[in-house]
Image (cartoon, rainbow over all chains, first blue to last red):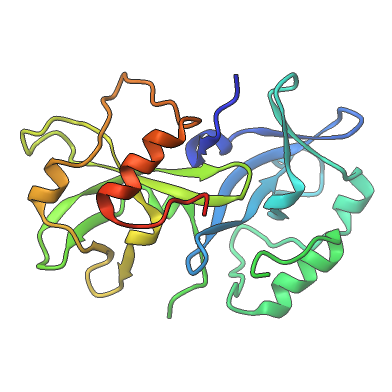
Length: 116
Length: 116
C-alpha cells in the first residue's frame, strides 16, 4: 500500500538508486519553494565515501520515482552524469533567488524548472 | 533577506502564531503530495501543554504566512477555531488516500484542497 502523502521526515535519509540498481546517494533534505508550495529539490549527497566529497546535489523533485521494492528513489542518471552536475559545498551559500542557478540545474538534467 | 526556497528541516520546529500574536503551536512535519510534488499540509501540534493533548493539526500549507519579525508562521485562526478543527492522535493512522478526509480539513479552514 502506498500513501498519497509522504512526510518530509521520511524522504530524508532515503536512498537514491540509478536504473541499474547502483546506490547513488541519499536524500538529506527537501527544499520547498515558498511561493508555490512545491517541492523544488531533493538535496542528495553521497555521504563522502565516494571520493567526490560531501557536495550537495540538488535533484529536481520531478526526477525522483519511488520504488517500493527497493525502498528508495530511482533516478534515470548514471554516476558520470552526476559527477558533472551542478553541486554546492557544505559551507557554500547558494542564492536560490537567482533563477540562473536553478536554470543551470534544470537544464543539466533536462527537466522543467520548479517555477514553471 | 528572504530566500525563495526553504528546507523542510527549517520549517520543522517553527512556531505558529495567530494574528494577535498568540502562540498556537509549532510545526512537526511537512506532508508532501507525491504526485504533484506540492506541500499539502504542515502538521502542527501544541506540545501537549495546552490541555488539548498532543493531537496533530494538519494545516493546509496555503494558510501559512512567514513573518520575519516574529520568526514564525502566522495563520488567520483563533484558538477556538483550532479546537474544533480536524485532528488525529499520535497513534492514529490517517488515510490520506481518502479525499473525504482532506476535504474535511480544507472545508473547515475554507481553503482549496491541495489537489486542486
